[in-house]
Length: 278
Image (cartoon, rainbow, N blue to C red):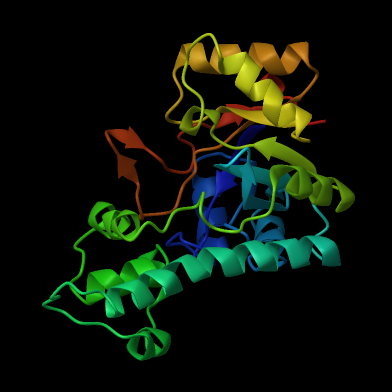
C-alpha cells in the first residue's frame, strides 16, 4: 500500500485538520499515513478515527526536537502509545522550549534599543490569537501581523537577529528522546537526513552517530533528497537492519513550495514493499 508517514496538521504548524488530511490521503490513493506534529500528540485519537472513517491505516506518530553534539535534529516517533506518561512529559518539555523561543523573541524585540516603527509588547503577544488554519505558529503569525516581518523567511531572520536558535535552546538530548520513544512502544526514526548531512564521504559516518544515539531507522524518501541520497540512505539501512520510511513533510498550504521543491501529501510517498516498516 502507498504510504506517507510525515504529515503535519493544524495542531502544530499545518493548515489542515486531521479529517482534511485523511480526505486528501484518500483522494491521492495513500492507504497508510501518519500525522507527526511537532512535539504534540493532540491530533490523536481524532486522526485514528478519521482513518477508520475513510478506510485508511494511520500509524500514531510525532516529530520531536532534540539535540546531539550541540546540533538540532528532528526525530520521528512511530507506533507510540499516545497515553504513555513519560513520553507525554518529554513532549511537553520540548513543546515548552519551542514555544519559549517565540516568547524570548518578543521580549527581546520589546526591549530592543532599535527604533521599531511597529512596537510590540509581551502583554500584547500573550493576548494575541490566530486561527490554526493559517499554519505556522503563534510567534511567526504575530510578527507578520504586527508588520515586523512579511513572510516566513523574514520572520526567521528576526529569530536569527536576536540569536534565538534551536541549538541554544534546552531541547532534550537525542539519546533521551529515542529511549523514551522505545519505552512508549515506538520506533525512533531520523527525519530528513539531508537537512543535516551533506551528500559526501561522511554521510554514512554521520548517520551511524545517530544510530549510536538510539535511532532505529532513517527517512530515506523525502522531497529534498536526490536519487543518489536516497540510494545511499537505503543501502545504509539495509546494511544495519534499520527501518526505512518515507514522508512528504506536508504542512497543508503552509510552506508548500520551498526553493522549487514541493512539500505536500504524496510528494515522497512510497509503496510499503519498498520500505522497511515491520
